[in-house]
Length: 206
Image 1 (cartoon, rainbow, N blue to C red):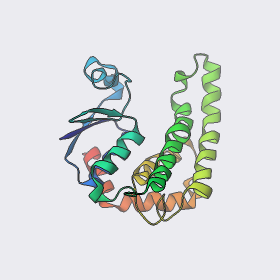
Image 2 (cartoon, one colour):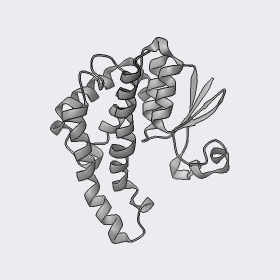
Image 3 (cartoon, one colour):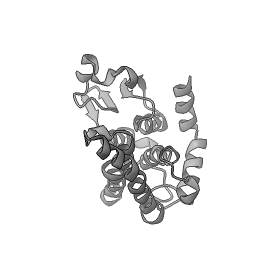
Image 4 (cartoon, rainbow, N blue to C red):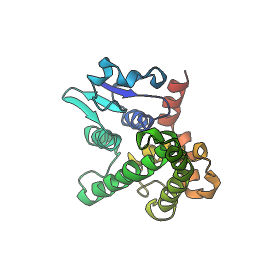
């Protein structure tokens, strides 16, 4: 059985939804960040990066959300979570997830975790001020150019969609009006209505 290490409020939620979409046999292990469990010896033995998510498989541990989502899509092809046998289509999926991972997600993180990049309180305050502007610009590019609709890649639902769902959900947290992103807001609502999402959210809330 697969074991997903995750935590509340993190991108691990996207991986959990994808595993649910795939009908994969898995268990979710939720770390308590308030108690710094991600830096404890037990978890560092799983993932020395001290980050979530991490997916333990029978062949070893996979880290980083795009890699985990790509693995889920390839390991459970019957779920149709990626364009099977289409090298260009898969590259498009990976490109979309890479943008979320390399730019949109870190842009949001600068508001809440400025201490990762600076020690000076004034610099951290400036990161907090600037981050919503950078995050908003990244999401606006997705809204206007990268998002194909009705799903991230077009007509077919893929592993990009739970990833985008979680990142879009951070807009209000950063003081950004989701109504300013109507296509992403529609996607967010439709994702929230899907059974896999509802199942995972109910489990997290329980």
